Length: 198
Image 1 (cartoon, rainbow, N blue to C red):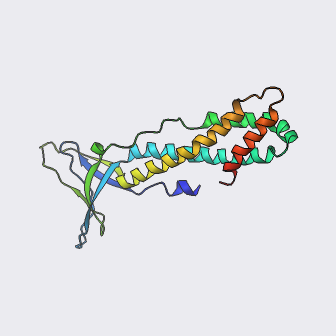
Image 2: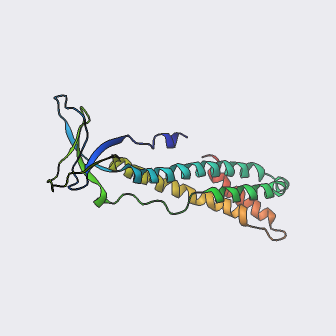
Image 3: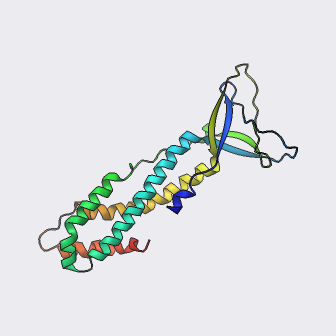
């Protein structure tokens, strides 16, 4: 799944003082400094968002395959009538395995930490005024730009998911009235053809 493979960002392992919030790492200076400002977010929060994105991407892929199957099986009224029960069960299964509708929230601005990252050696500095409570805990962080990019990708995947899931619901939960099977077939095939090329 190529779209998911490039969604995993590089992480930075940093210490952070629980007293003043100063941050850094144990890189040694190589004599050429090129520090640039960056914002980082806690990697655990990012991981929740990433897991949701990967699950949603997998669901969308399965729903696109389902749409292609609908196009093939809805080619003729007889073929659709024979395949409808199997399509209905598959649609219900896909909908049951889909990730919850509500995505985890992106890390808000006030929980993002400002650091200075050296492009040459990877040293991180984020000094703060010491409060005299020096307790450093090590954790993983990712760049806020990567976090925000993932949020945008989730929005795109959710926009794609809505009509795909609607097609699955239409087939999974609709029972045509007598004499209306052909109408259902035409509607399903028309909707499925929109996605079958994706």
